[in-house]
Image (tube, rainbow, N blue to C red; front, side, top):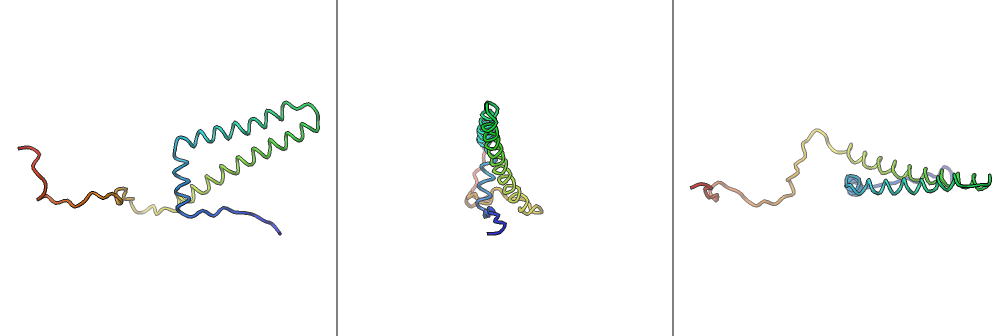
Length: 113
């Protein structure tokens, strides 16, 4: 197995769902929790006494920080791919999926009078 590099392949629907999650206020809460988890590894590292324990805790803190950073980087990459793949030259019809029925002037009753 030479240069194994697993990649994430999300389709447009999955990217859209991910973009929706990132846009929600709760995503900032998820980021806050993730940073706090990484900080716990750093604090554990700083509280070690022996050289061996310090090195082990340093590796754990580094891996935790790298994993969290890679996770957020992949999310950003997928969301950016989704956003930039949208056709920019056409306006988006946000009401295209609304079903408001048929409308004609003959059916409307006068508002005043």
